[in-house]
Each structure stands twice: as structure tokens, then as C-alpha cells.
Image 1: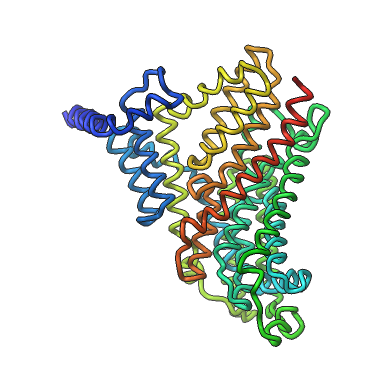
Image 2: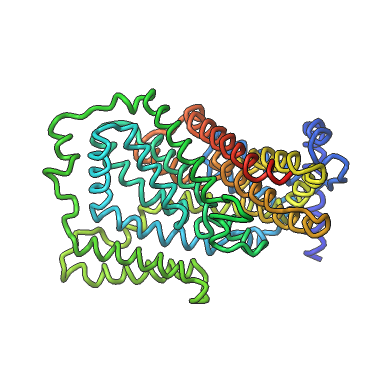
Amino acid sequence: MGGNEDKQRTSLSIQIAHYCFEPVFAWFIQLNPWKGRNMEPIQITTAIIFAVTIIFVIIRKIDTVVAALLGVVAMVAVGSMTEVQAFTFVDWNVMMILISVWLIAGYFGKTGIPEYLGDRTLHWSKGNIPLFVTLIGGLAGFVSMFIDNVVVVLMLAPIIFHIRKLYGFKATGPILFIGLCSNFMGTALLLGDLPPQMLHSVSGVEFLGFIWHSGRPSSFLILTATYLIVLVLFYFKFLKSDLAFCVLDEEAAHEAAGQTTEHIKDKKFAVLVVGGFVLTIIAMAMRQFLGVKLGFIAFAGTLLMVLAVEILKKPLKFDVPDLEHMLSEIEWNAIAFYAALFALVGGMEQTHILEIVANWFVPFIEQGLLVGTSVLYWVTAPIVGVVEHDAFILTLLYVIRDLGETMDLNVWPYYWALVWSGTLGSNLTIAGAPALFVALSMGEKEDGEKMALKEFFSYTVPYVISSLVICYIFMVLIWVLPLM
């Protein structure tokens, strides 16, 4: 009896939501790529809930985490997914990695190493803050080829915090730039982000294939060239910003050069933390031989490091806060936001909306290489700007693979167009790249104020447009025109 009543209530909720929203979105349904595909009411309702949720996430008129969680609740209420499915759609393996490495990053921040690295980098840049920020951002991109982008933000943000205190500039913009950079090069090699690992799973491409493939430069070389150009462009952007006018007094400058301050006061503690982090990363790189999930490896490595710190804290007189304090420094709102995004995209996948969008590309791919890759590239970019890109990219990878088998199609230009635009386009909003949300949260907490939406887009929009245009030119010249 109870099951029938639940089904009736769900059906009634769907009908009410569809009746209320259908007139408002009628024009969208007529113009969108799903026209003529007989979308069901639950699909329309799910798409509307997702769109409204993302709008509130982006404009941040209400708390971002609350908006995302309300979207999940709404999808469950109308029947897009069950509450159990919403829970299972969350990649808890990723959640465990985030929590574990965030805790390691907290201990890393207590070692004094970020301050030392900040001072050294500032010394190399001769006090030029625009150059300093550009160098730290550049480092973030190359490190993210081997480490998750959120982890990169967590490890490098303390360096910005230290120099920010000396110069008095706002930290949010530079840390947001680190987030953008850390999300750039994840597809350059097989290790960095999930899309190249999914491409490996679908196509069988190995590590060297990301450097040179089919007799031509592939992901690493093309993205590196694009990245270096974008860094130069943003250096000139920073030269015209408030960062170019930052100054500090002579005594502070002397300390920043590392001549009077010994930042790493407890070298044994620093060695223990860095050693724990390096061993954890090595173990994560050997996951296929260990046969366990990355989240478990990260958790086990972090647990062993924390245990060692707690045991040795008194005998070696480590000056470090207790575990409870370290746990309180984790940005739990970012963890909740990440989980909510997984559930929201899971609702879209459960109702086959991502599959509908993926199949929309097929007629364009059939028209030829230049048209197919261009449409795939430029339509994917804005989609992943508001949709967490992993599920969308995986769906399209399978579509492209199947087309290659049925049409005798050279799939590689399409594979590269998809993963490159899917990575670069995701930098548009915090909904597309959770690493940006982490960076934004940390920067705003440091500054004690929120960044305006206009200022946020003043970083993300030029970054996304410049990177997409430059990469597209390389893609057409190397992977499209020679193969036409």
C-alpha cells in the first residue's frame, strides 16, 4: 500500500512541476537540441531543476552549498532519482581523497614550507607581484599533471596567503588564478585528471600516447604550448591590475627575501609531513599494483602520518595543534558542494539527459571532420562550464567510439576535441570546476569578504576564451586540416 501511495505522490509532483514550468520553458524546448526527441515530463523537469540550481550556484544570492543541496532534494522529490541513488551517485572515493589530502595540506601549512617557498619565489621575481602570481599559477598547472587539481590548490594556497600578508593585496583573485591553472593541464598526461583516464579506458591509449600519437603532437605538447601563451597573457593582465601597485616596507621586504626569517623552525616535523605526503602520492600512483581504491590509499596514508605526529608530538616537542583543530580547518562546505554536484549530475544521467545531448552531436560528426570537431569543441565548452564534466565526457567518448566502429571514422581528432574543450571549458564557473569553488572558498575566508560575480568572471571568462581559442587553432592545424 505504502509503495503505491509513494508512486502516486511522485507522479503528482511530476505533473504539477511540469504544468507550472512548461509554459516558461516552451521557447527553450522549441529551440534546444532535444527538439523532436520526445522528451518525457520527468526529463524536462529534471533539466529545469538542474538549470535553476546552477543559476543560484553561480549568482550566489543564497549559500552555494544550500542551493546545490536543495537541487538534489528537488530531484529526489520529483522522482528524477531516489534518495538512495542520490547517495550512490556521489563518488565517495573522490570524497575520501579530498578529505585526506586536505588534512595533509593542513599539516603542511604548519611546517613553514609554504612561507619559505613564497619568499623564494618572491625573491626570484624581484618583488614583482604580477610575476610572482604568474609563476605560482604556472607551477600549479604543471604539478596538476600528476596530482588532483583540488590537491594542488590546497598545497599552493598557503604560499599566496603568506605573501598576501606582507603586501596586503586580496588573496581571492590570485588563488582563483591558481585554481584555473590547476584545472588546465590535468588532461595533458594520463595521470592528472579523470578525463584522460576515461579516454584510456575507452580507447586503450597509453601514457606516451598523450605526448605523441598517430605521428603528430598530442595532448601534452599542445596543451603546454597553449598554457604558456595563456600565462603570458595573464601576466600582462596582472600588470594592469592592483597587484602591480603592491608595495611593502623595507623591513618586510628584507624578511620576504628569506634573509632574516627561518620559516621552517621544526625540520623534523617538516620532514615527517612531507615524507608522509610523498609516500601517499607514490602509493596512489601504484594503485593498479596495490589493487585498492585511491580513496583508501589516501585515507590510510593520511591516518599513518597523523598517527606518527600524535605519537611523536610530545617526545620531539612538535609545535602543532591537536587533531580536532586540524579537522576544523577542512572546508567542509566545499566537500558538501562537491558531493551535491555528483548527485545533481547523477540525476541528469539517470534520466538520460546527458545521453540525449551526446547523441545530438552525431549528425554534425557525420558532416565531416572540420564541422564535427568544431561543433563538438565549441558546444562542449559551455556545457561543461555549468555541468561537472566527467559524466558528460564519458558519455560522449562512448558515442564517438561507437561511431568510429560503424562509420570507419578516425576517432582521434574527436577524442582530443572533446577532452580538451571539456577540460578548458569547465573553468567558466564553480559548477563546472569544483577546484574553483575550493579556491574561491579559501580566498574569501582569508580576505573576510565575498568576491563579486563580475570580478569572478573577470578572471574566468578571459581565461576560458583565450585558452579555448588558442587550443582550437593548434587542434585544427595539427589534428584536423592534415587529416581532411
